[in-house]
Image (tube, rainbow, N blue to C red):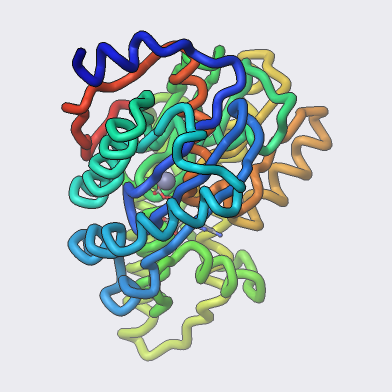
Amino acid sequence: MSYFESVKSLKIKENPLIMGIETSCDETAVAIIRNGREILSDEIISSATEHAKFGGVVPEIASRAHTDAILTATENALKNAGLKLSDIDAFAVTEGAGLLGALLVGVSFAKALAFSENKSLVPVSHIRGHIAASYLADKTLEPPFITILASGGHTAIIEVKDYYTHRVLGSTIDDAVGEAFDKVARVLGLPYPGGPNVERLSKNGKNVVPLPKMLSHYDGGEYDFSYSGLKTAVINYVHNKTEKGEEIVKEDIAKSFTCAAIDVLVEKAFKALKETGYKTLTVSGGVGANAYLRESLTDRAKKEGVRLILPEKRYCTDNGAMIGAEGYLQYRRGNFADLNLNAKAVIPL
Ligand code: KG4
Ligand code: ZN
């Protein structure tokens, strides 16, 4: 019997132990999740500092770092959960989107584990993984809800109708919001990763730099975003001031950019809540860690009587637990891969 035939005949368990493996970018992350909601262990080994001197993630360095770290991350995840490899019911792995070479490390590793243990191999979309982090943040959360997906690669307002049906109400027509944070960080001379550094600087800044109000003159989809113009406006502002020998207040630029980038996300998310009649909002993705976004959402949710789910910052940025949580949902409906599973650089939202 082939591997696939033999795992297909395994019974799908009610309360499975799922290992979530994530290697799409610069975090090698392995977690063990019980019953889709409970984190038993959660290991993250980041190669961010190795990329810092290049100002962004270097794919080849990321792939090599995953190769170095994946066994340690897996062994630690098992040890900290007090489990053996044979206790795991399914191996869930990010199949995309992300850096191809980096993804291949996780996919190959997960295949080897699934094959050797004769357990299911569950392919997981990184984007759906980010959304599933909310199920770990609040064990009682059930769809429907609206989520703000805001990461380094994606920006969208998504209607989560049920565990498996997601509708994209709108998304960015150019750059992602996290990408804009990273580029603005660069022009301000801040190291990679940009988002947390812009946030640090913005804490002492004022929202006084004139920047374009996003989409005020864009007549595309009402839930769409455009971050390229905002990013260019910041770059032009810095260059013009510098050329004229005028002083720039980096803290104010960071604050003004943050407000312009975030306010529109908040605005559109609450518009989506109003239109759908949903009463629950969550955030998904690295920019969800941003303090200004979290404060703005908290204030607004309180005023409008909306239930807000904010995953801890660690579960907004890339992690294995979210892959385990989404892996659980895919496991329950028997979405298993064969050993010819391949990594995908791009995956539809
Ligand atoms: O979700 P994530 O870890 O990886 C992707 O799937 O892209 O998101 C990474 C992005 C980066 O662009 C990073 O600068 C941004 O999230 N980010 C932040 C913060 N922490 C991470 N942006 C703003 N404020 C933060 N505190
Ligand atoms: Zn991510």
